[in-house]
Structures are given as C-alpha cells and as structure tokens.
Length: 357
Ligand code: IPM
Ligand code: MG
Image (cartoon, rainbow, N blue to C red):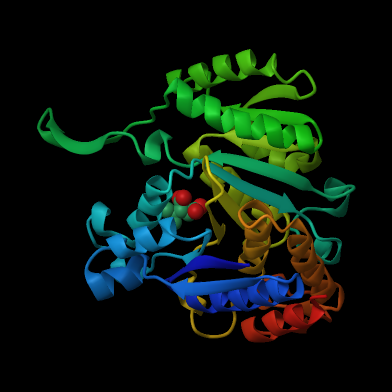
C-alpha cells in the first residue's frame, strides 16, 4: 500500500521541519509495511514569489488528490506589507477552507522529560497536563464579512464574528466525541456575556449535551480560561472553542508545556483527508540555521498516521521515538535545560529516526 502525501513546506523554518517529518513518516511507514510518496507543493510566501499568489490552484488539486497534507508554516516579514488577500497567511486560510477542514485538534501535553522547560511551577503542573484544544477552523471572525468604510469623516475597518448553527453543531460533535474517548470532560469556551454568536454556541452545546450523558459539559468565558490555563491547567481535559479564541488559547496551552516548538495539530473535515501542521509559525529569525525544533512537525506526522492513514501503531511508534530521544537528553535550543546536550534540527531528527522501532 502506498499513500500519497502532499507536502507544503511554506516559509521560514517550514522546509527544514517538514523535511525532518517526511523522513520520519517514511521510515515509520516502512517499518509498518506500507509506503508514503511525498510531493512538495508551493504555498504562502514561497508561492507568492514563484506564482504571484499564496495558494496556486495546482496546490489545491494536489492536496485534494492526496491521502493527507503535511504543512510547514507560512509568513515572514518579506510579505508583511502585501494587501490581506495576497499575504502568505491567506494561503493557509484558503487551503483549510478549500478542503473543508473545520475541526482543528491541538493536543497539549507535558513530556515528563521536559517538565523543567515549562514556565509553570512544579506544584502547578501536578500530575502533568494533557489538554486537547478543539478549535473551529473555517468560520468565525477569520472568515466573516470584513472591510473598510468611511464613517463620520474617518476610516473604519470591521471584521465580523459569525457562526451558523450547523457550523457550531459539527465542531461540538467532534469535541463531544473526543472528550468521550478521553477524560469525559468538555469545557466549551466563549464570551457569552457579550457576544450573540457565543450565546447561540452555548445554547447548542447545552442541547447536544443531552446526547452525551457520559460527557460532563461546562462553560467558561475566554478571559477566565486564559487565566485558568496558567493557574490550574490540569482542571482541563478537552476544550472546544471558536476560531480566534482557539488560535490564542492553543498558543497559551503550548507554552505551559515547555515550548510551542513541540506541539502538533490535525485539521479534519468530513472525510479522511486531513492537514497536519505544527502550531508554531515560520520563525524567520532562525530559518535555515539548523536551530528549529522539528518535533512539532514530526508529531504532526504521527497524527497523520493515526487520523488520515489509519495506522495507529505507526503513530504510536513515532510518538515513542520522540519520547526516547527526549529521555536520552537531546534538546533543541527552545527546550534546552541546564546540563542537557543542545542539538540542531537535523541531529534531533536523526536521533528520532534511529529511535524508531
Ligand atoms: C495558526 C496560525 C494561523 C492562524 C495564521 C498563520 C493564519 O496562527 O495556525 O495558529 O491564525 O490560524
Ligand atoms: Mg496561531
């Protein structure tokens, strides 16, 4: 069996981390008796430079014809002054939309070997942290009506937070089902004390909770959630929230685990096609210097094996290999600890490759 995977390296550190992840993905496949054929496609600033747009049609069709998509990162100061529709980030938003990937899973866990990399005190980390942030990915203010107009003689700009009932229902369904398979607790995060879209979200969540008697649903305002994540992170099991709140809270959740460089994500829709990317950005300041942590991308490849390619054993093998490399003391600069050996992207990737069994 051979799976086609579209690889969208993008900008900054994207190419080096996806290269590392593809190597691990292919070796894990080989060890499990199947193979992965990877084909690079342009997106983001790289596509703007080559083709004048952040998401060429050929990239979209290559993704649609693949079993899964592995994405690096997009963006960088070189393209910061382009109009909104021509920015690298627009390429990422458009591919999520074009593939109908409305459910973004962002697991945040603390690896025992990395406890000291967390900025939180040991007693706050307690028994550890294992949070699944489920972020709605193709709606809300990211995709709502936006524009500029003149009002009372001055320029006004607006972006609209809009959620339809079916968009809310389908993301909540993903979250309830995930929570059911985890700790059975789902915290829905909103701003229902101010926003009408949040009030509809809450109503639907409460309605759906009746279909999931085994899941304990709670609600939390987003400002309180931002505080609780650093005050008592292990109160959370599964969090579900809208597009922008999810963007912000998942960065916060990642930092309490030690480094944003560690965290993978899976973006899923109705079928098995998914897009897998680390949650960090393109880090242009360290691009091409063999300094980036490839683990976020490698763990994204593990999620791909589990959710799109249907090979949970190969996914577990990749995750164990990462754990073994970390237990062995290797650290990239972002997770360096006193006394540990600091290595570059390539060396970290190579040791994860050789830890694969
Ligand atoms: C992310 C990123 C993107 C987002 C940007 C690059 C558009 O921050 O994947 O979290 O906001 O979704
Ligand atoms: Mg983000």
